Length: 174
Ligand SMILES: Nc1ncnc2c1ncn2[C@@H]1O[C@H](COP(=O)(O)OP(=O)(O)OP(=O)(O)O)[C@@H](O)[C@H]1O
Ligand SMILES: O=C(O)C1=C[C@@H](O)[C@@H](O)[C@H](O)C1
Ligand SMILES: [Mg+2]
Image (tube, rainbow, N blue to C red; front, top):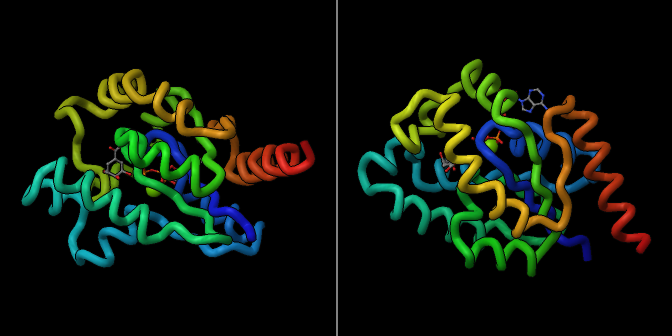
């Protein structure tokens, strides 16, 4: 059985982008909890949060995580999935968790170029660079706590995929 691979990390670290490429390289199915949630509810994340609030969104995100978890899948998660202790334990127990780690400047540049506000409503009401810095400072330890592997996500998507595959291979061999 091939365990599911969960990609975790901050908004803009490339979970969706790298996840698609990794799934292709591994011959796995690709699933994204943000896409799944928006498709099944027929609402954007911004709409869900505006109507029901962040707490309701977080509960639905946990439901999405449980619903999409299956063998032979690469699962790109939402940037805040690690806020829940339940989700952190669930991912570690059910599969292999990879933290795509990138510095604030890289994340902020990507998010400024492609804000996608429907999927990424503001978390703090602050400008992007300030928000990324503040949120990453609070979450970095949680990403690390959840992760079996940490990779440098400031590289090209192909290089990030290669690094993940190398880490998985090394772990299998040991
Ligand atoms: N390794 C990379 N190199 C250059 N650009 C990248 C890389 N990874 C992602 N990007 C770009 O950064 C933007 C955000 O990437 P992506 O949507 O994959 O991030 P994410 O981690 O899934 O974010 P979210 O948590 O909001 O779902 C996209 O426009 C994407 O093209
Ligand atoms: O970092 C976050 O808290 C979020 C990241 C996105 O992937 C979405 O899951 C949502 O906008 C929340
Ligand atoms: Mg994504």
